[in-house]
Amino acid sequence: MTQAGSGPQSTDGTQRLGFGVDVGGSGIKGGIVDLVTGELVGDRYKIETPQPSTPEAVAGVVAEIVKYFDWSGPVGVTLPAVVTAGIARSAANIDKGWIDTDAKALFARAIGHPNITVLNDADAAGVAEDKYGGGKDKSGVVILLTFGTGIGSAVLHDGVLLPNTELGHLEVDGKEAEHRAASSVKERKDLSYKEWAKEVSKVLETFEALLWPDLFIAGGGISRKSEKWIPHLTNRTPVVAATLLNTAGIVGAALAADTAALQGHAR
Figure 1: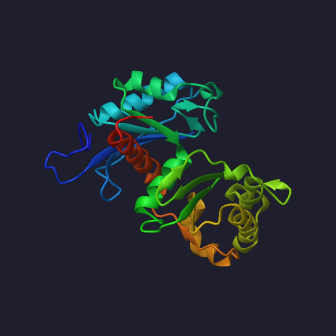
Figure 2: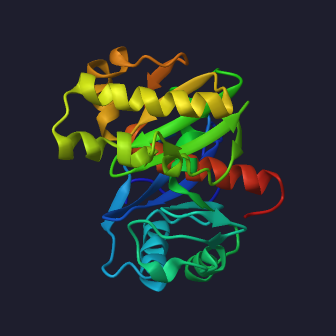
Figure 3: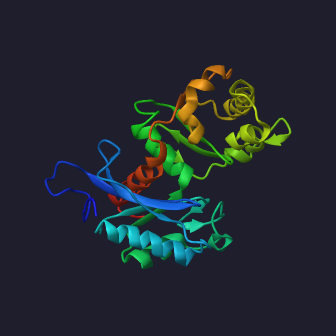
């Protein structure tokens, strides 16, 4: 065990702490977060996603991660799914049994208390990047896009999240955006960074016409090589690389849970 904590204050009172768990198709990882800096306190703890990744099996792993840290405060959990009022409405890279599952109630039973917030994984990353990462100190409309197998999205206005946007499914010149410009398309078609950036630009220009953002944040694994493709983009809105990388989901989940607790309810 790397760090224990029961709630939002550390033992010496110098940090405001939160706890997040990020559920992915291959791994479930969690940790304690310094909500002032957006950094993890100690190491994260990761367990392979059970196969099949049924709701009960995943909830058991989430509870195990929370127990590992001896954490009893509010908990934020991300899912690769649309989540409304704590209920999973879709399932991407997890078992289809999640659809219409009351995820909030499920995790509350598994963890043993009701202070649970459940949100979409891209939304969690967007919240984290907007506050602590690529969008820090940026006002207006900020859009995080995660380029991977598909394109995940999060839209925020002055730090307030518009949940469950699915911009990757918008049609762009006859194709879904993610079928045109996901990083998996680059790999499958063996495109150069410049060729792929042309497709990304076309997608970003469509999003610009609809939402008029002030900033795009590019996430996903390919953001680590942002210097190879961001300079080739031709859309008008500034694009910066995400900075939190594989901690963004944990950090965003912890922040969402803390925000819900401060508002006197957990979603």
